[in-house]
Image 1 (cartoon, rainbow over the protein chains, first blue to last red):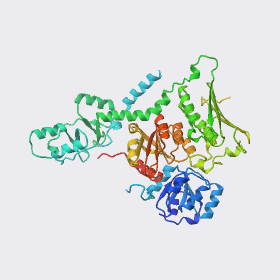
Image 2: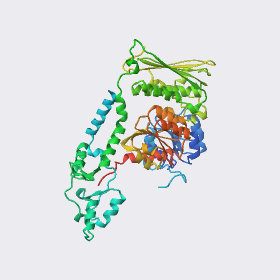
Image 3: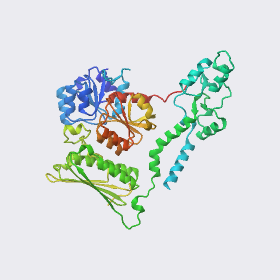
Image 4: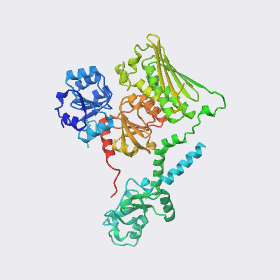
Length: 121
Length: 310
Length: 124
């Protein structure tokens, strides 16, 4: 599914990376701990978090994640927005709490399966 | 007095429950074509003593271990359960009180009763004695928190003291950078307030405010003291350190503002919401700080939400 | 966090998440009305209620303290994480159920979300 479709279906706000919403995504990851994201996220994941500081861009860039989705109405800090724009990383925002947003993404077919570390269905 | 209220609450719960609240979550039913020879293994595998026979959502009969044994000892040839089942099935409606179900078990001595939806006449589940117990336990679990609030007597330790004025002071010291024990003071305070008979909502607010202030003390303040002064009207919490001090107090009060290093974030802190949480839980919050000297955080929480505090 | 459309028994949640029970088999009687997922203490502190489950990747003692402050009934750690014995003891004293699922927070929440959307086991 294209990021732009997800933005539309879940009514997400787009704060950076408006031109980068064409990518296909099919997996998601959620965590507010940089160490967990670095250890377990996979390339092209949609990353759901409520962290807004600069580090999130560095981590998203390092792991080549497709975008960052901030929940609970969080807004990225000014430096975070600027860095994300420079790195071409879309930051999307939602008023929904994490569980609700993840659930809706999951129902759209964005699974959370990690290779090898979990049972397959 | 509180004990008696709790007992009445439990009785009230029992009378309020319906059979549909307690019915089994997993049901084994048989189709009319199930063969008698299969009955033994089905009952045994599911550890049940009887199963209803249901077709097109209607209960046709019920087959029990006794029916199976009768068929076996009579030496009859294999047939479908429809031929051997009991047809005069005693059942319960889904909206009947649980107390009726208990009376039925007493009167009839059966293992289980099918439950029928009163409006449609359709099969809606079964209920066994065990289900009644489990249903009561579940209802008690859910209601426990509500019971805590409604069993709150309204009399605090202070109101029970025969004096013109009663005050209590608790003091705690907190070591700096000792993250392992972060929250110990808040935890002790919470338990103490519970012993003093305060309203659960006040206890919760005090615990949250103290916890956030305590973590700030450990992470940024280099440790210090937490002092709690209480009387019948207000809890006053003072958190003091001799740490680096806060250069710009207005800035730290902004939600999301944080100077937290990465290791703090990796422990789940440093999102800059600490003071916001304290403000949401207290009547007043005052921060006095001098760079190089230290910081004092004063939090006041009124014990009566309806009253403003001096 | 989100309120579940129906309360889900803790035992059922354990099955949905294929979770190991760290503490305690005998405590799995209750029902959960709300699910929170977060790795941020201040976020958890601003919500929290006594019929709730917290899904988190944080296994330090403060997770238990935070849960204690807001009366969270159960915590499920993700990625198969298991806290230190001292942390488990702290949870034991406060009678907080501890579970551990091999799923990620995303996968765990996704599964629970789908479970809450379906009706309770329908009878024919």
